[in-house]
Length: 361
Image 1 (cartoon, one colour):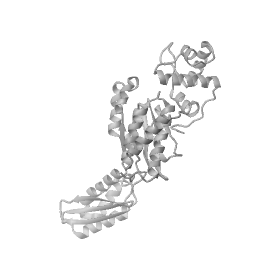
Image 2 (cartoon, rainbow, N blue to C red):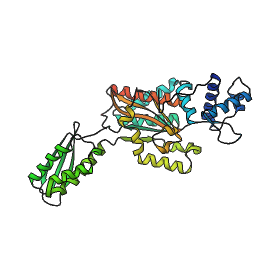
Image 3 (spheres, helix red, strand yellow):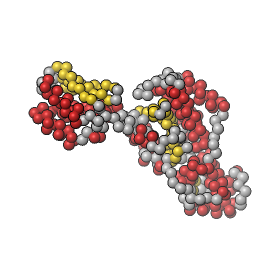
């Protein structure tokens, strides 16, 4: 299991670990601060209330617990959740009924990757009661390997771009007639200057150099370069889909008021989350395990009180997507991790069997 943030945990006694684990699981269940009396009455910890209070105070001083109000119980901090996920959590075993439901539902819609992902996120959302997402990753670096310019009439050109083994075209309209030799000159410059460059590497100074080399026909460069950059950006843009966004309403203590609006804006805009699901982010240190980002470990500021759990999906050694859920930090980690692990592995198996579609969608 991979974590979103790695760091050496402070050494805890077995009693402290037992108490911290009990507090986290009680808070996940209740959604309220947990006190020593609750632990002695409901969690069967064989210590006095005074001893538990002392241990809780030390856990708070160590940064694993927080006390939201004076004389109230404690709640886990992000560090507490991280230690729980990394070291204390009990492995959740899916029931036979849950496994069969996942397997049957996935196989009902296995004709293409998009269909499998849609089915998977509906299952993830309904079976965890959190917002689920499926992602196709942003490409690490998309470039054009060859350009051609085809004149369709005196005022129009077709810009042809070879990206990998895929051909993309863009129609360019000029305000003045474009002679054949001008189109040929521009084609030569594009192949000499822009092949092998990503959209970010096609800079304004580089465009100005090409304009200088075009001389009196420099007016053609801006629309052509704009078309190239837009095509590359659209090609590497990735894709996100969601299910169960309305489930945020089940957690008003986390997603109330302005925070709900911020989360909805994030889901609608998608760009920030797509950065999380770039090939570089998803492949970094990847061993195929479940990834967990708790609170401020998340790359997206809006999710600083949420947890993102996801697992990459592969076809062979090729990364084709991911399935995950977003929910409050007090989520049922054990069950969610097991569910996402099983779902993602099931989707990968279907793709390996040749039942999924082209990952390009």
